[in-house]
Length: 282
Image (cartoon, rainbow, N blue to C red; front, side, top):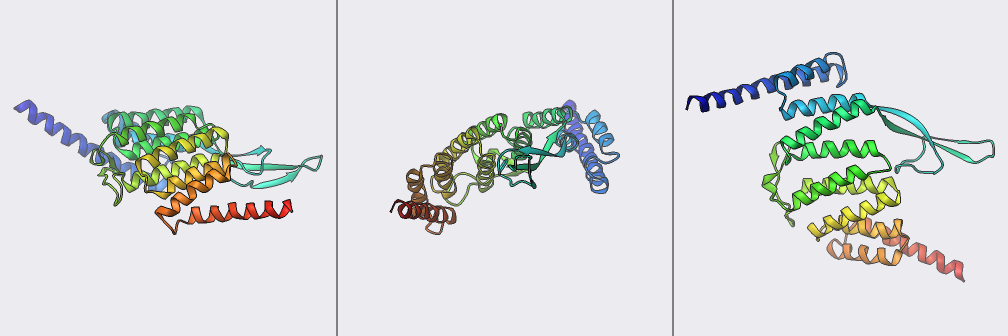
C-alpha cells in the first residue's frame, strides 16, 4: 500500500514539475521567441528531469523545428511552384521568363531532432491528434513536392482513427465528439480536408494521386460530406483533364448541398469550356 501511495505521489510531483517547466518555457518564448536566448536551456533541463513527458517533447520539437527552417529563393521553370505564384519574374538572355519562388529550407540536423521528438510524443500518446498533426505538418513542409512520408503518416492516421471510437482520441487533451451527420469528428474532418488541399497544391502527378486517395478514403467515411466529393471531381478535372467524369462528382455533391460553392463554380468553368470549344469548332 505504501509503494502504491508513493507511486501516486511521484506521478503528482512529475506533473507539477512538468507544469512548472511548461510555464517557464511559455514565458521565455513569449519574451524572446521560440529560438531565443534561454529557451534551449529550459528544454534541456526539462528533458533531464522529465525524459518521458510529452509536453517536454513537444517543446523540444518546437525549438528544433524553428531552428531547422529558414527561407530561400529558388528558380523554377514553371509559373507555379507548390501552388504558389512567383515572387519575381525576370527575363533570361533569350527573352524567356525566369520564375523565382520563396520556399522553406531545412537544416537536416535540427529537423531530425525535431522529428525524433514529436515521434516520441506520438509513441507515448498515439491518440493525441495534436502530436499527429504536428508531425504531419512538419513532414509536409520538409518534403515539398515529394510528399511520400507525409502521406504515409496521413494514411496511417486515417486507418487508425476510422477503426476506433471518437472518445478514444483527444485534440489538445480534449476528447473528440462525432459530427451532426457523421461519426467523424468535425476537427478530424477539417484537418483531412486541409491535408487534401496541401497535396493538391503541390501539383505533381504523385501528389495528385495521393490527393485522390485521401479524398476517396474520407468520402467513404463521410459520404454526405460534399468537400471530399468535390475533391474527387477536381482530381478528374485538373489532374486528368476529364471534365465528363468531373461533372459526375460535382453533380453528386450538389445533390447533397445545392449551395455547394466549389461544385457550382467548377461546373460553370466546365460549361464555359464546352461553349468555347463549340464556338471554335464552328
